[in-house]
Amino acid sequence: MRHLLTLEDLDRTTITRLLDRAEHYRHDGAPRGLLSGRTVLTLFFEPSTRTRTSFVLAAKRLGADNVNFDLSHSSTVKGESLLDTLHTLEAMQLDALVVRHNENGMPKYLADHANTGVAIVNAGDGTHAHPTQGLLDALTIRQRRPDFENLRVTICGDIRHSRVARSDAQALHTLGVRDIRLCAPRAMLPETLHELPGCATSEDFDTALEGADVVVMLRIQKERMADAQLPDATDYHAHYGLDARRLARAAKDCQVLHPGPINRGIEIAPEVADGPQSRILDQVANGVVTRMAVLAELLTQPA
Ligand code: ASP
Image (cartoon, rainbow, N blue to C red; front, top):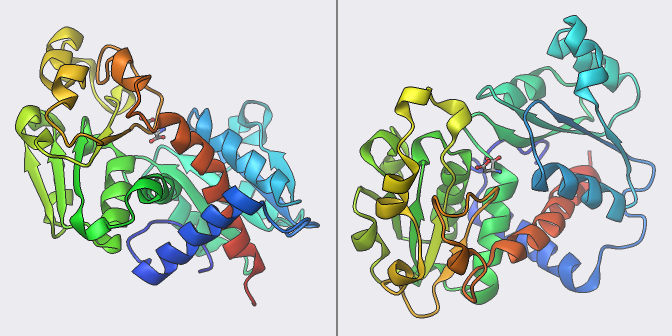
């Protein structure tokens, strides 16, 4: 692994190794100073709360230097191209560049042009992929249910515009899940994802929840839609909001995940977000160790 751009090309052994490493860090911490003398730069062209903070913490907990690139005060606002920015940063002896961008494929473009020795990590590109989220969601699920082959997983919300849905489905499929139900109103159903073996689409949330062991709720990606496409919030909640009454249709110990930020009262009711089946804060905690595992994997392997 030289870069982490998508989960599509990672096999089950590699994903399992990353999850094992993350779990190990969660229990025992990382070896002291594992990445000391290395530099990790975070470059976010879209807003972020959890992902950016957890990458910063991950780099620090591994002993690396972290530089948070402040876009509003950088020369990109003066028109510097992304490639010129990349080469400028590389000249400062960069080891890893963690990048989030609203354009699909931008991390790959940077990876194609990066110097050998610089690892590019995709922290979310457009509607395409969010690989570390896919890994941390798989880790969260595995902590309670390691038997991926038996799991029924429902992913509900704006799947069409969700890079999380794509990476979650990829990770779970590779790990052996055979029943993945993608549920959304027609306008938010995916154009391609249902081609993944084991994935089925549906517009009826009540049916899609029947017996589910895991439900992943997603936010409506307003920033990727025209205002006219946005559904009415009350109507959306009535059909696609997860409340306690609906959750009762799923398996008794069904785990509820949400990558955040959550919109209470739209895709998820507070009683569920804060309820006993919610794994949302576990996802956040797992985010840090998963990102540590990814940085350690990329920056400690033999050249
Ligand atoms: N934080 C996740 C992402 O960046 C999910 C979301 O924003 O809805 O894709």
